[in-house]
Image 1 (tube, rainbow, N blue to C red):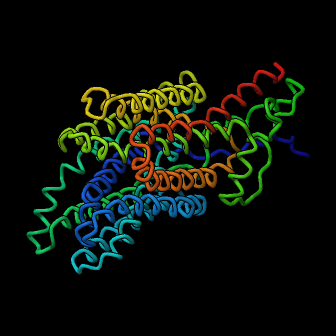
Image 2 (tube, helix red, strand yellow):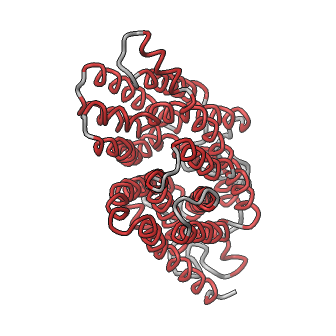
Image 3 (cartoon, helix red, strand yellow):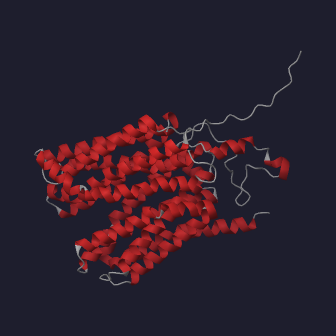
Length: 448
């Protein structure tokens, strides 16, 4: 007797325990934040002392940012092949090796190796950025941005605690006969080792790039049966949406080229890249600007702390807003906040102890809105098989742009002052504004 046919349901991913996975990611971000901040707080001074050239100290931050850019795409590929936990553990292992290399190079006085070690630090930053996408993959539908924001929020604790441990780390290193300023990198190495062990042993997520909403979309009846429209085509742009078939294997740059043809994905990419570029370009020049106008180092530290608080402390609020009002609106809010911050930077006197901290706090807040809004939009806009390669390519692009911004900001400061730095930052926001206006026009033209 012939058995009746049974309709096969789409295969779904087994969802790990959300609470456990999210806790692992949060603790991991805290540890990694301590590792990055405790070493990088003194990296510029260490490089300047070793090379006896003050200007070389600025290359310390550039080395780390370029390291992050170089690590972003390989770590994304590894996440696709072996899982997020393997990719994150590998990133922190590279950062651990970088911290050890800095200790060895500084103790032996071989300065070039310090830059290589600091580039290894960038792998920790790249892993930390990838962790925000891992958070969306374990989130319940509708809570992706809030899950991401909690992971970013944990970075606040690590970023604040790391520099506070610098003196203790320095004394600890001297007790072992290490040169001055080297001890904090021992703390960094320990933090990176713990981070790698934690995510490697305990973090479990669905396959990289998979969201629970993908299963729901696969189980839903075909949209063309209900509306007569092709669900694979974006109504506003005509671009193929995430329901369209994608190549089985997609490289990072191929994913980026595909995504920029979709107006929504382009806004997401530019929100991440432009927000980060503006933030880095203005932030790195603020301490120099303040000290040139006679403000104390202590006040500079307070202003940078306010900036970090704006970046990470408000991230749960931004995540909640994204889930409530949508990514596009939060990106627009972030761009407006960044514009306000740069305008204050142009108009405020350099020794104003109220307006300068306000500008830096708003700069961090605008960055938070742009990063969380853009990252969430990027995650939910493209096909699942494009998602992780595109995430890696976007993170690489944002770090390359930030490295260029940090390197060129000093030149701009010398030519046009701090006002010139902020004017250039406004120019950087122009592509995001144009892409946003284009998306708005296309959306209005789309049929109901």
